[in-house]
Image (tube, rainbow, N blue to C red; front, side, top):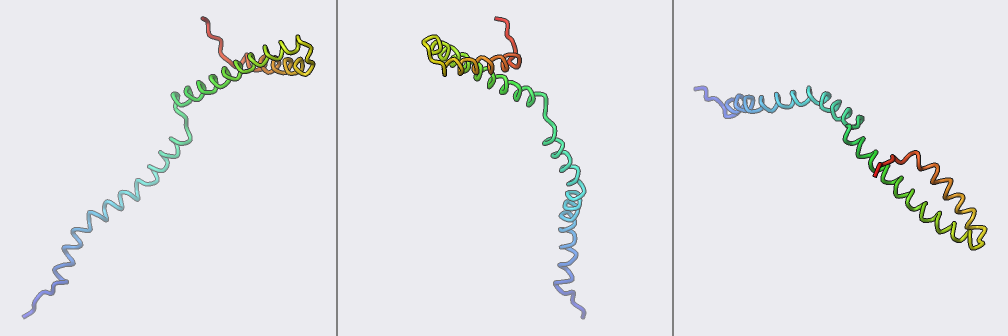
Length: 110
């Protein structure tokens, strides 16, 4: 009598159970370039909301710097009026930087 060996019965069972894994792996390999390209495009492009947030941060940074310069300018101008020549030069530099920043800070009607 010919008895089927355990290995002969095991091989078809393994083939059936692994076929799902093979199909899943093949599908993953086929779609991987598309997923990678999609991620690359997402990383390379900036959404409108991200651009708006970045612009808002930049405007706030300029406004803060302008406020600091105005405070320094008034301080240096007072010192200049008291006869401090170095303060006069600093006040002039502060004013020049303020004039540079002003066009880059949006005007808000209050």
